[in-house]
Length: 370
Image (cartoon, rainbow, N blue to C red; front, top):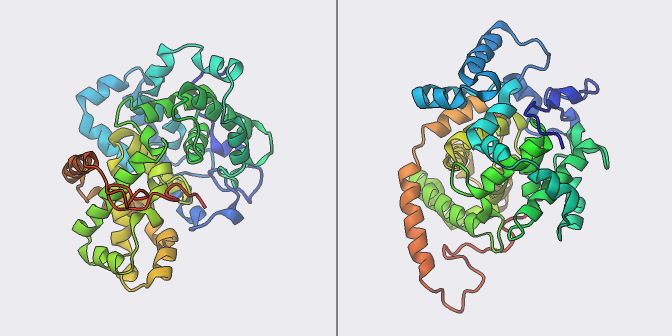
């Protein structure tokens, strides 16, 4: 099994002018992805400013990541600021492994991935095969049936379903693995998936995919409270129209915005997510609602749901949306909401409400990826 940390560059799959700088066929991209792709130069010759930025990052990382931990300890604020501005695309795969803790997991578990792929069987194999063609279907790496991309994605998802049989496989996991495979080898992608779901650095994500989706319920409950607190007029409008986060925001958490959002924006969110944790998903969600507040507050139920799943291109511009997101401070409130949620969860629910979460949010169809 390939175990190098060299990035698999989406740009290497460019076949014609119908494919953008990230490897997506342009006619299938929504939300003006190509208009936003200024975050990644299409050509192989970055401009002087970008070259200077890359040199700064290489100096910060060191050869193969050798200086990374030392630099983070010495200058954490510089690291945070640079990550929020966006990791250079040519270094993204390596940096993601460093900030997620997955590199350490790989080094501590030599040969484990190969064992899982070659010698183990999974109860989820047919389900994984069924879903593979639904993962980034407009990216050239995944378009060929049984091609390299689909085989790599199958291997990573199958390996994880064996590694953690309690979680197994859930459809949304394909978007996480699919995104990672565009920037690293199978083995590297697998261990980053393990780092995320098992919590190598931040809180474990596995509750997003366990039976009953317990972490999805918790996050949606917290997000609903944040909307009411930070955007009270819009929160009241949602209440009047009977719109709750399970109707529009579950896939934000399950796929960390990698499903149906423009790729340049998803990458910038992932840069921050891997370094700062899930709070950025709440921040970006609130920023989207704040950005479109004046339009959303006028819409009736059906048009409101449509708008919450189809944000305008301007709102999807990472250079506009992310500074707004970072200005919204949520860490302390999320800690308080988490404690409150856990206290309420300890209280037994009335027998008449078996299908509701402890927040009152219906748990049916939370993971629906249309």
